[in-house]
Amino acid sequence: MKADIVVIGGGASGFAAAMAAKETAPAASVLIAERLPRTGKKLIATGNGKCNLSNMSLGSRNFHGSIDAMEIIGKTPDWHELFTDKLGVACATGSEGREGGVYPRSNSSTTVLNAIRLRLAALGVTELCECEITDIKPSNGGFTLTYSGGQIDCRRVIIAAGGYAAPSFGTDGGMLRILKSMGLKSEKICPAVAPLRVSPDRVKGLKGVRIKGEIAAFSGGRELRREKGEIQFNENNISGICVFNLAYLFQQYEGRLTLRADLAPDMTEDELAAYFRRLRSDRRGSTVEELLSGFFVKNLAVWLIKNVLGRSPAEPIESVSDHDIARLCSSIKAVDFEVTGCSPWQNAQSTMGGISADSVNDRLEASKYSGMYLCGEILDVAGDCGGYNLQWAWSSGTWAGKNAALSLKGGRK
Ligand SMILES: Cc1cc2nc3c(=O)[nH]c(=O)nc-3n(C[C@H](O)[C@H](O)[C@H](O)COP(=O)(O)OP(=O)(O)OC[C@H]3O[C@@H](n4cnc5c(N)ncnc54)[C@H](O)[C@@H]3O)c2cc1C
Image 1 (spheres, rainbow, N blue to C red):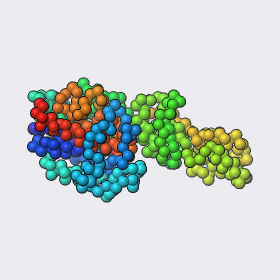
Image 2: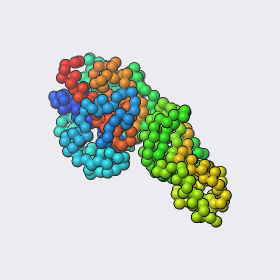
Image 3: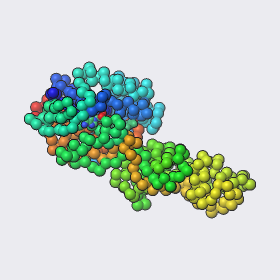
Image 4: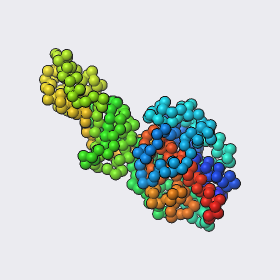
């Protein structure tokens, strides 16, 4: 089998790469090779089926890793140009999830996938599914790709095979291992946009508690990043979008990362103390539990009474001293959870780490292999939760596809 350009991976970045390649070099044959029975499986699952495809506010703060994502995003069409103008997907902003998130107006990811499919078909891009590429060899100025059904010869290859996150969608890091064996450098990986593990003993009794708060990541007493939003406690981890946005830090700070939660960010310690002192006298004759029952859900109230005050919830409310209230309030404003690990890959939405900036040039072409381009999650870029990872996939895919096609037109081998 032969094609001018083969895109390995039928996900968001592979679609963008194939569209851009064919638009740039319409005469070139472009083939998407996808290991799963269908392309776009992960895209359908994004944003809880609603596809948070970009964000109104994109900045370097939202992207992590050695590659300058914003530089490439700045060189490619924005979401409006790509989705509304070119693909005909009407979009709405800010209606769901994170502030500034861009979604299809239909609130359905199938609208996005359908529009992409129509465009790929109109352009004449072909797909080969159940085609897992297991080997890539430079040959005759191009590449020979091996899969179970045989070999594909191509002049350019675009690797859009994703990372390790959510392996049920075809991404188990296999392609990263192939690239590493070919001498490309990969930065250390860890799950991003994912929960962070804490000791089950530390969160015993908190499972299922959700609270609007603020959470900061600390290492060695230094605050690394602070996020606001819903904090969710589980049996052995803490999740919620604000924690998801701190997970990438595990790559650099493994073993020395602490989450500090503010469980009442809208109130000062003094305001909290005044509130609890008033309640203590208003609820005279009741129990310690009733000191907190008007403020927190029961499980969190009981957890604070046991872990901060070292009391039983059934003790009389009068036994709580002013000093106890002060301790309680300082813990409500800053309660620490040591991070003991990252989440399993199946609970992650993205990959921190991947093929490093050292291994690609500014056209996203592998420095060691001219004619091989990379895009999407396989590269060392992890975006925040809120449409940033898909924006990176669209932009890096478009950029890689365009450059691969231009190199054909320019007559480079
Ligand atoms: C549940 C979930 C929800 C998400 N929601 C959002 C969201 O709302 N907004 C957002 O911005 N981001 C979201 N993300 C992240 C986003 O989906 C990814 O960052 C993005 O899909 C990455 O695109 P990609 O093209 O690099 O890789 P992928 O979309 O992972 O595609 C890679 C493709 O390559 C194929 N492949 C892998 N190896 C081979 C091989 N050897 N041969 C052939 N094919 C291969 C895989 O089967 C897969 O289809 C979500 C992720 C998950 C898991």
